[in-house]
Image 1 (cartoon, rainbow, N blue to C red):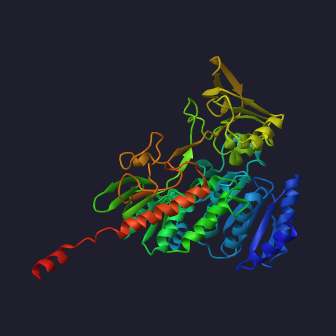
Image 2 (image 1 turned 180 degrees about the vertical axis):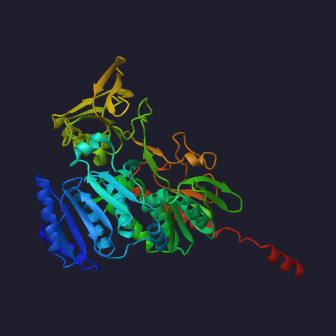
Image 3 (image 1 turned 135 degrees about the vertical axis):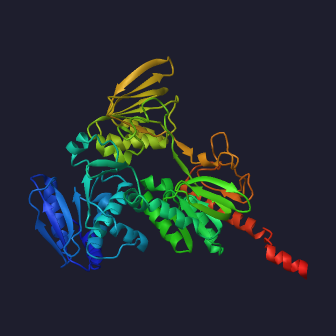
Length: 528
């Protein structure tokens, strides 16, 4: 099952095991069960602390449970954990086998102290780049607390469950049989959902922090770059972000990052985070900024209620997927309306779908989906596609892709549970049409994450932060960088350069500030 290179790598990892673990298998007659058995045996051959056992009858087959024989913890994989999930398997083995978690000790103790019975199920697709973060977070919780159990379920392998639970987006996480959340989340956010007082304690902790010389709002490429440059200048630097990595974490293939011919979003995010943490940067992830006020210092309030103070700011909040804003879109979001073809595409295997948008992202999505689904219809508002010619040729060469030009989407149609179709208007004659389908993938560009900045700094008509050539906004001491700004060409490498520039400009601003004279110093001067 595992090739020679993977076995060598995995054997090296398994040398970190400290406690025995048992792989308990539930199998049936499907080929995937034979693959699961081979995978478990391959793992057991690499370490004397790993054994394999027959689990008999269980809810799903194939399933491999990873059980700590000392701690009694249990987590499971229903489906072959390869592709994006191979790292999840490796970490599950290590953490179940006593290898320490790279998590703050306070959070570890918080997980261990959770009281109750928690049975998590996470439905994923092996091509989803967001799913491993959720799987790994839930696995870590299960490896720490015997009262927490987690099963990763490959939606493509268990289509009957996906359909019975009407799952149209991954990751979808169920807790004790009830839907808890859909989409990407972090370990801290998961724990906060179980520990109702966690958010309040975290807010109090953040509010007690010292004044930052430079606070970066946003943890994408621009924010990471700004933080590194700030820290290298010796400034007290903080990063507050809803999630580290930003939209890059949702990107699959990256082929235009100079000096790196090919990488993937999650891998680049991991490298960014590692680089940032090599410096004394206070990274506060899982915190969404609600408002910014200015007096002598900048006061940044998060949605959790925390208040941070800073002498200067670099805003690098990035952008999010643009929505169609038509009837039915919000109602059926996660029920057939999707924004990540790589994540959710496998859930529509053998079905008909539409892609909204004819730019690079839209045509790339159509090509990828055409290899999975029965048929793809691309709806483009304009009279010409904006995608690169090479992508257009590829799409037009595929027999199960139709491209409709000058099509204005007017409504998402559904049966109350799932998407059943889409309506559009032919802009050449205003004729209304309806297409029967199961999924709609929206790929129509980005919207800057600047809603909380209205009235704080000058914004363009499109909502972008207006900056000058130094990255300075309309407010002295506030700088901005990346996709949230008016800088053209929203590219990772450009965002990194802009982040560095904004940070250096903010440093120059701080160096030119007149030092504040305290009241005691003023009295002493007068007395002299």
